[in-house]
Figure 1 (cartoon, rainbow, N blue to C red):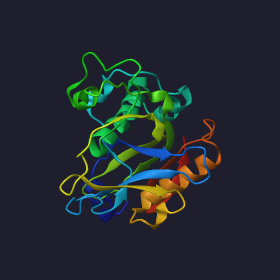
Figure 2 (figure 1 turned 90 degrees about the horizontal axis):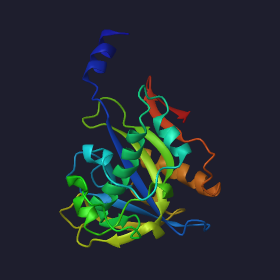
Figure 3 (figure 1 turned 45 degrees about the horizontal axis):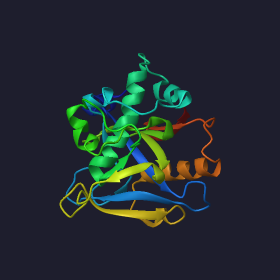
Figure 4 (figure 1 turned 135 degrees about the vertical axis):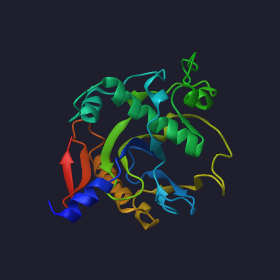
Length: 237
């Protein structure tokens, strides 16, 4: 390793665990719609770009009550390669995706059948006020991607997808000109690429398309994208 490479490695920001959720309207149809949000132009990370709603893992995500557990195959892929394969961590990632969807769009993904949680963690109280519980059984694990090194913000993001039919409530006025997401767009799958997307979002979009073509088969491996020695590599989980 050269001196320059060693110095660059020291400056690399450690990526934060995060999750994003893709809502699909018309799952099972040939050309469904997917939900994308445009980020505020003043934000430092992906300003003005269309993204899948998401954000970082919070401690309270480990303690939120659920209506149904993750598929065992999804859980195993989320934990693959970890020194401590704690199922609580896998569940927390899935919950973070649902919580971030609510915080950024006002859409509550879950079930009303059982009412809300009795003592939700503080970060989940706004969601819980809608008397819903998150159902992890309905989540598909589409891809994992780590933001390249040497950027001021880095995320190790797990991308999930679910049917828009699983939206059980909605909170209006979350998306507006001064919010993190200033606009929501339901784009047809074959037209979403025309939006202003980051390269990672485009890559996940391609993976989503392939998985939809395979009828969201739970037996397909999940791709893991990361930059290694200056080149993007694609592993499978």
